[in-house]
Each structure stands twice: as C-alpha cells, then as structure tokens.
Length: 418
Ligand SMILES: [Zn+2]
Image 1 (cartoon, rainbow, N blue to C red):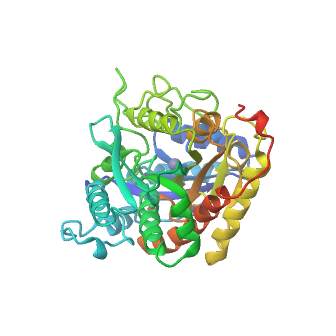
Image 2: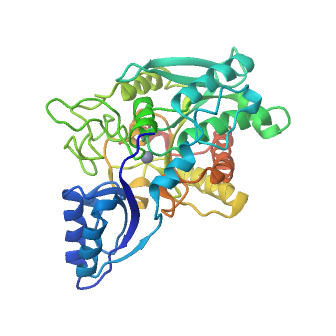
Image 3: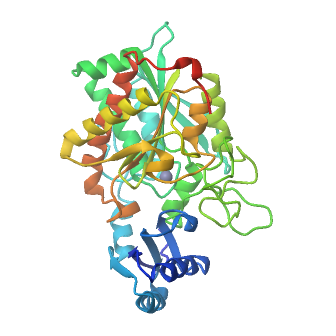
C-alpha cells in the first residue's frame, strides 16, 4: 500500500439560511481548487441548498478548510480523524495471508484482485456441479473479466439474473458481497428450499469485480480511486466513470465531459472495454436475463430506472413491489433501513448509467444497490461490518430473485420504452 498524505473525511452541513449561497460557493471552490475529494455526492454540481456533503482532504489542507468553514459559518463534523490508520487496518498483513484452501477462505476481510481471482478458480474447481467460470473480455490494462455462472445445469432455457460488483473501485464492500453471495448460495443449496428453487430454476451470472484495473489501483496506489484506468488523450487525468459510460442518454445531465472529474462519461459511449464486454454479454443473453443488479456503496438505497429523468417506468408497479419486498427482507435481518425508488428522485439524476441501459435493452428488473453505510465510515466500511452487510443484502437479492419466479402483471405492450 502506497502511503498518501491522507487527512480527514469531513461532513459539511450546508444550512438553509442567508449564508447558504456562500456556503455552496465555498464547497464549489474547495472542490474546484482540488483541496477536497468528494465522497458524497460524487459531483460538485449536485451540491445545493440544505445539502450535506462528505469530503476527504489532505492533512496539509485542513488548516485552510477550518478557516474557510469558520468564515462561512458552515457546520461540520470529523468522522474519521486518522484515515491512514483506518486504511491500514483493511490492508495490513497482506503478505502473511498466504493462499489458503477454499474452506478457510475468509469472507469477512477485504481481498485484493489476485486473491479474488484465485478464489474464483478454486470455487470453479470444487463446485463444478453448480459453478462455471468464464471470461467475457479484457480490461483496458489487459486483465481478464471473469464471470461466474451459478445454477444447476439444465437443458431447458433458464431465466437468468446478472449481478455485478466493483464498478466503482473504492466501493470495496461490493466485491465482498459478490463473493459472499456465491458462498452463501452454495451452502444454502443443500438445506434451504428457497435457495434450492432459485438455483434449480435460475442461472445467476456474477461478476465480482467489474472494474478490475481500478480495483487493483485502489489496493496499490489510491484507496479512493473510483473510475477505470484508461488514458484520456492529452489530459493527464486517467479513467472514466464506468457508470456514466453506457449508451443511454450518454453524457447528458449528471455526467461530466471533463476527464479529470470523477463522473467523466468518457470520449464516447462504451469507450471502456469493461462496459463493452458486459454490453456484449447481456445483448447475447437478453432473452433470458430478467434482472440486472449492480452493487455499489454507500447510501443505503435500492434504486431502479430511470436515472436520467423524472418519470415512472412502464412496469413501475412490478418493479416498485419487488423493491419494496427486497427492502423489507433486508430490514428483517438487523433493522437497517434502506430508501428505495427511481434513482433520479431517490439519489440524483445521472445519465449513461447501467440500470437505464439494461432497462432500455429489455431487462424488466434493473436495480442498483447502494450498500452501507450512510457516511460514517463511507468507503472505509470496517471489515467487522462485512458479515451483517452481506447477510442483509443477501436477503434482499433473494427476494428479488424469488419474485422472478412469480408472474407480475404489467402493461407489457409498452415495454421496453424509454
Ligand atoms: Zn458506485
């Protein structure tokens, strides 16, 4: 782990009062001058009235921030006072974590890309009756893009569910969930009738790390890296937001055309090889894939289309009730509350997102999870919370998948429509 001069994540409370305008300007100028790394929201254009903003900044800039905040009378709290220490907690002892057999694989720690890939190979060998691993393409830096097919082999055409994790590199709980899902599904298959039904009747396509280059970079160089690692012509900034790069209202509201921004849409739609590979796979299997699920963090939300506009989708009732059941199932584990609804109204408007693309391309249930927490640890969700977070999310995903086995009556004539 390269050590960077990490400072403190702050939460700013921008108050609705006479000072709000200068407070918003202040937040904008801090960002423009690159003093801060925005955690939530992920674009400065989304900072507005009565907003709370999570930021992380270098220690050497904190004096300047204190002064600016005091002058503008902006309320703030420090959530993590020693970020470097928190990062090291999650990456330490890497060298002593030698290769272990699958039965000893620790699902309650974060794993590097190499460890996750070794785990995939091992699972593929030891569970060949229910698992099949394959690659759908190569990343910008040439890494294979592995997917696990999970389900009982069958000659009949089975409905399928796509789940991807790790689209945004710094959201480490995502890949941890994808691994957890595979492990739990295989365990439960033996004695849980619901899981047995799911794996008998459905195929799951699970991509534990979508943005492999970015994820690797978040382990080796910058823990808070979000984008891919592609080069952008003459600009020194690298990477594209892999959730703004899909060909649906590409690079309109809620995406940036500047290569240095965290929500950069890319030079063209599908410019990223990772996005292209998933598009190609989903297109090929579009008749069977009934649900698309993308796992992100953090906000504690379950989102569905549209992302790019404020309007209800044609099969709103079916999707809304699936989301309701999922959130209820999640809550039943530990009482953790999730908000749910269309991404545009529940989180913010964004264009070129994968859920809008999946929906437009005929996948009737498209969801994005924003897992724990709501900003206390943010991207540094402690390893002790991997177990409860994955457990409750497992219930939600199971509820969505079980719903696919039932009929939901909707205005199908209008679908797909965007
Ligand atoms: Zn994300």
